[in-house]
Length: 117
Image 1 (cartoon, rainbow, N blue to C red):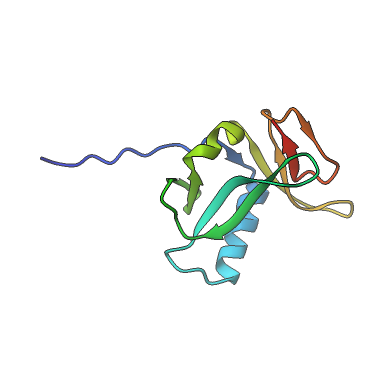
Image 2: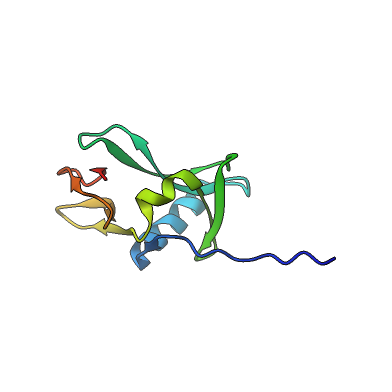
């Protein structure tokens, strides 16, 4: 019996500038094949929850995706908070860093990394 692998599309999107920055980080840090881009949420921040965007090892509850040749993981339990979210990277005079546009957020704080749903 042959096993068929099904590619699952990630529940969020990344801008070209975000992908470029992630490729740059991955290359600069010389991350191994056991390091995945982790996208998720954690409790805390001024609005109740904060975004997680970091390179990390895969965990027990993770779903695996690939975005522009970058291996990505996300805890299945976080999908409800991140579905249809868009991640951008800004490198301007007024703002620098990753920006999260989350249609699931009912409120956000001024820093842009904390939200409530």
